[in-house]
Length: 235
Image (cartoon, rainbow, N blue to C red; front, side, top):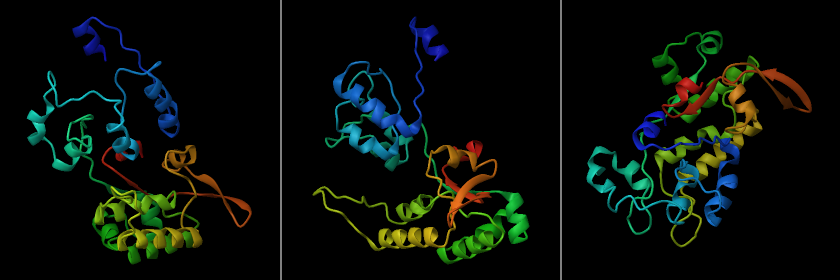
């Protein structure tokens, strides 16, 4: 921001909106045009809805000509920002492969090792993940913050949209399996019931959190998070 201000002789006002409130707070301003920001961040959860809504400039046009740099991008990342007519409305600065981030102290205590290769082998399948989750539960820990953590496994295996162009729900085998696994995680109390982006979700990364089980409040730790590359410093 400072560099941009110096180069262009303008003043940039930064507004930080909590991610949980971001779409609901920003959308009315974008729809009305009153108080709408000149530049705003897009999140993959609502990106495809917004690229077709007319909120963003057409970056395929001059003077941007971003199609000229498409070869510098992994194709799916570049295509995410395209509207239905193929014009680029949003451009990402990153490609973020995901991974499972775990607390090495808990791994050593419960699993007898904190070695990434060994932990990776233990969690290389859903059966393995549930075996580790049960061991964590026996020690009073939670495998994931919530059931949504494993949705990325399903999306990675089968990136087809949940709803197709005809507004029909598409339930592939991978998606059905995800819902079954999520149900099992909840029923077996393997998660901390801490929804993504919530205060307890963040707190669970670095310290014990309190959860309700069988009508009682208990303190526990979350063993692992499923996050993209930027998740490592966050966790």
